[in-house]
Image 1 (cartoon, rainbow, N blue to C red):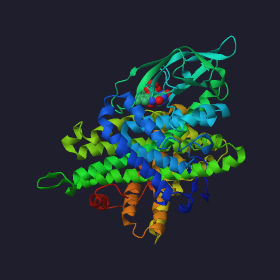
Image 2 (cartoon, rainbow, N blue to C red; image 1 turned 90 degrees about the vertical axis):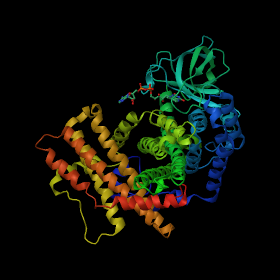
Image 3 (cartoon, helix red, strand yellow; image 1 turned 120 degrees about the horizontal axis):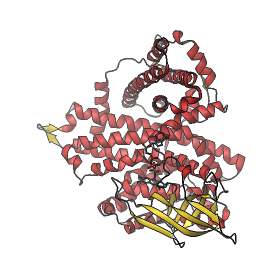
Image 4 (cartoon, rainbow, N blue to C red; image 1 turned 180 degrees about the vertical axis):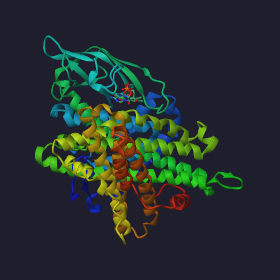
Length: 592
Ligand SMILES: Cc1cc2nc3c(=O)[nH]c(=O)nc-3n(C[C@H](O)[C@H](O)[C@H](O)COP(=O)(O)OP(=O)(O)OC[C@H]3O[C@@H](n4cnc5c(N)ncnc54)[C@H](O)[C@@H]3O)c2cc1C
């Protein structure tokens, strides 16, 4: 495997990365920490005290809080200065997404506005559209929404029926149709609406104002969670949208929609970190107060196991989030030189990292579901009480696996996109996979005598990648073009890819931390348990995949190779988890 600095999307499967080439959260500078503190203070002052009222569905209250966030400058983080924002780096944008992620349904409303509601116009709008809309969205003077989903078009987003026809005088598009599940629908001033012009096969995008005649907003949906966020249907009845409000070119809408989804997935990956940190802090505070059998419940091994499990998955997820964020910043810099337009360079760079965006979305949303579920369990009966934040966190977490493309769709994308990029020649995958597959009997776990700590962990990651390549080659060889219909096998491979990418990011972070911090013992514990668990996913998912395509004669050699490649040293996971939980219990909050 070669060394490389800025990897292409999916290239991590065949190329090693050095710790110096990744960004880790411990490297945030003073300004970034201040921005995060401002977001945190905002939640404390403006959001948490009003949470109960927000949950009653008070649209005006949510609107007011969003406006205040705008006044404080929190809405212009992703917008360049020339359009009224602060033009922060992608790493900083992700830090803001993370910090505000602790804001329950406020966070959903805020992210929908700043992300999918604003950025399509910044990225694809012309100068006039950016001037008319983005400058006001960046300050909160206008609030935005994004309208793609329809009753009959969810995951299959391009199948929407909303239609646009050019008026006879050529001045307007006449829009008719219906959108559903639209976040911020209740108060958004602008809507990015996707519709097909005439009988086009693909979508176009339009900027629609709520005050345009014929725009009808339905009542808010009654939802399981994020109850403070307005989600409603929007109907378009002969709405006259000026031709100047066509966003991008005719037929470019599906591309706009997909690119914005990549961005949304990345930001969701950051968002869930903030929510998880809050849930972990709530968990440990409760465990350090609640006594049963005469002692604090935080002294019980079963509770320490849960606390450590929360920390491990969060810390690993966070390592991957900031690794990707820096890659995107570097890619943006490169593309800005080529195309000269910051907005376009941003979305090109974001779209480039489609594989990693899907990984962050799936891994992060499932991490948060796990963390939130354990938070409720640690609270026992109190966790089931609507008075507790962990109860709200549990309900609010669930949506993350559904929007920004369901996790089923995103799992398919992880493998499909990586393979397509490799086929296009962006990196060499299939040749390497075939070489490994042709020599299955020679594959061992590769133990080296006297191997040091990090060399051993690096070898494990390299082995996991080899196991993935073997599964890819076997599946392609067996199913050929039909592989796309073998979703179970693709899911197995996606799980292997996701866990490996996250474990590698964690390894690189801990290696880098060794040079930044003195004592990294607890981080090594986190890494040890994580890799131990990942090895099990590689073994199980790898063997499941192989047994789904290999004949009885072929299967033993292939699964034998997977078993060898997923072998890791035995570990006293009980003690490692106790030490990880020990730090959390001592700090009485998430502080890693
Ligand atoms: C609270 C909330 C807020 C939302 N906000 C917005 C918003 O602001 N703007 C917007 O445009 N949309 C929004 N959405 C819509 C959201 O993006 C969709 O709900 C989501 O894309 C899934 O579409 P669907 O609900 O039609 O489910 P479906 O597509 O019908 O999926 C149903 C199930 O089938 C699975 N499935 C579907 N296709 C496949 C396939 N090819 N292979 C395997 N499995 C498949 C799915 O994974 C899922 O498990 C929101 C939704 C909710 C609930």
